[in-house]
Length: 239
Length: 329
Image (cartoon, rainbow over all chains, first blue to last red; front, side):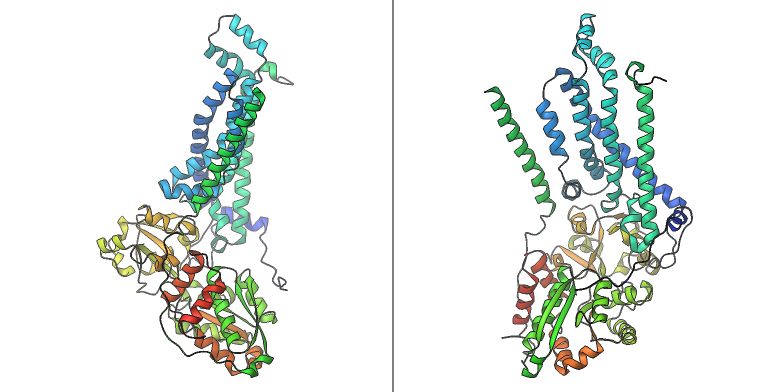
């Protein structure tokens, strides 16, 4: 029976903040410094870029299908089965699988991360449009709107809260998972987390803090955007 | 009727989706087909059982990854053949745990890489770790002695980082040593583990000591180090000298000789408590040093291949080694 006898050197919030702003020495780099604001910004931008690529790809794939099926009111099974099965695909295995097919790098990661975004986008687009009050749709049709106009002027505005819930879920899933990108050729903030022996415990904690801050920032920005786009009539307390 | 049909359709769709995602998983780890199984060469003195040793109980440890487990099994089985009562604990999580276990007496001894011992236990910076097996061993031995531990002489093989490429590419570019990359590396892409980028015993060292600049460095998971070469994406990839693929696909991959000795010596040394060595008598060191004589780089690659690619157990691989090298009848 072996009990852990060493207490590992603990990271501190203060140390992590120092790591974010000032380059630090490392035991294994032969004198080169690591961390600091320049490296943080570089990795953060890479992560943001990858997130935007993957989110855009998943939206282009999932939303037209979801909106169309929702409007037609058919294919519920398709939307929910893809939605649920898609969540079960293991991301690491997918990256490794595609590494053998198309190699590693931005393309691999964009597709692998887009797969994470598709389920919530597809399901929410379908449900959002499908649940719109049929009498509103019938009234629009009675006024002589074309099907596309009904979708654009009636259904989408009424479905904004549900559509945005899907976009927000997809964004958070993608940006959080983009942290593992350094295993497939793109340096994101996960580099600080994966390489404890280069960056030290403070670097690991700094990486975790930065990823969390990035995710929260995106979440709040999208929430603000959603509020602006939501029709006044749908708000509980219109501003 | 209609709802039954829908349910059936749902079940079929679900099974399809499941099969699809399982397919993805299965494909993720499918580089374990081609293998070779040539017998290890070399003949050595058979281990003689000594009834005196039956009074001594030993526990042989190792860290919990294939190469370590194979080594642990080899030492344990050899000591058993020498007449000792041997138990094994081949599931120690990290070098820190193993080091503490041997110091506290929870295990009698375990195999450790000289480079790991120096950097992890004794605060030696990677660039100060000798690349030669003997100086690295001497240095580690001295440090271990201060802690009341004894280190036996190193194995012939060394487990270390290496710059690797495909045989085709090496022939085309005329590459045998890392120095041969001079003047050519600017056009080549290098892939390696994420931590490699900044480590002095990896990319930082290649830049500093060989003066090499690469077209680009791409971090990848170590599980993909051969995939990127096979895929033709990487010109060069950081491999490990004991990789089973190097034995299994000899004609496909080569490693470039580290002619300036930048990568630290990762020969294995067996570490025990001094009091354990004294209690166990002379056969202890004799058996350990004798049984590791056959462990050349090729043999270790082959043993790793048996376990990692052919899915033999470390126990089976170790037994096969002892038998074919003539240590046991």
